[in-house]
Image: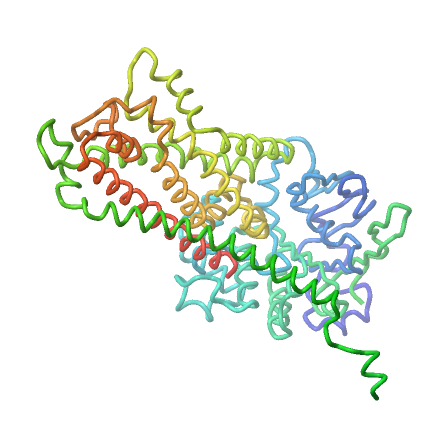
Length: 258
Length: 294
């Protein structure tokens, strides 16, 4: 199926489509994101494909997170951030006129570096987004489905009304994942989701990604080469290009995960 | 051996001794200054309690001032007046103060936010007599005094206190929480309502309690707005009402020594309320800080 044979061995969970069948979810064209006048990441052309796990990897400061955050307009929250170029999402520029960032984020969910559950009960953490977006029919079963997909249901089903801060870091991060997928996004962006977790919790998150890519398109930022190899179908390498103003991230290679 | 001990002597030289002396003296002065603050507070509390406690009885709390020539009577009208005045003022200042804080910390561009903060600080520093005169000119001239006009003046005093306290606690809400909510496709306002405000409610209450304590003791803004002698107990904010601080002033001006005792007793009531409120505020703040820091 795959065009590059050796990868089949490295990827036991192989389920990715052959290159010709891939459907692009994102295409960035000349994407440059600057904070103030200093570009953090410069001139990126990258396609991200449906139902695949795409890893973004590179040294610290190379703009991987900035790039990821430009995919769901989270950079809008930074007043000095400026985006040039295009981010096409199913063909439409998410920075174009008439695009509502709230609608963008509703379709493109995100899991952050540090688990950030709301100071609410476990149930309400997942249900809050559903309520906000008006997906109130069958709330209980939606919550259960999301928690099951995040492999957390069995651990929390007896304590749904308890506060989310009582969970371990790994459980909190899976709760955040459940919260993100409960609202049925198209894409889930993960910004170093396991960097604050122990190895066991990390491997749980990684296992989950293999499951979740059947339903979602996943983009994960990691600084861990092994993690990229374990979870990703495609890997984009960013590096830091030194310039007079300091340095900015550039995409140097994008290929099937070796 | 002996030469080494002489060269590396660890006994204090004259210079060191002098430096030590200065150190001890300054430390002593600073400690004394701190103690004097405590002493002043203690003196106030003790003297007010000593002189006021005797006049505290049931009549004091339930009756209004006795008619001229009779003995006894109480300050029920002032107590009810202060309760109504401060409650109304809080009802005005709390929502507006919180909204101001939300605007400044969640919505305003940084430059506007700085300006708004400056305005709040200036408002906080305005002498309360000026606020009293302002409200007098705005609402009282031509139509007479009323309790709600006093509440309006008190609300102006409370506004910057509530807003600044709310702002401080909003700054403690981790930005990652806001990001988490926004990343779900929630609007700014839903994020504030659903995640930011519930997290900071303890701190907002703290600020409100402190503002209430401040407003309860304010005299000047009420002087122009609701100071006409109101000897009956009324709950109607369209009527002028007596308040605790004004009543203390009036009673202490009276020729009757029994009234002086009542003034002290009323001062004790006000002082106790403010002390309890401040302690409650501290406890609330400690609890909400713990909640935020997990």
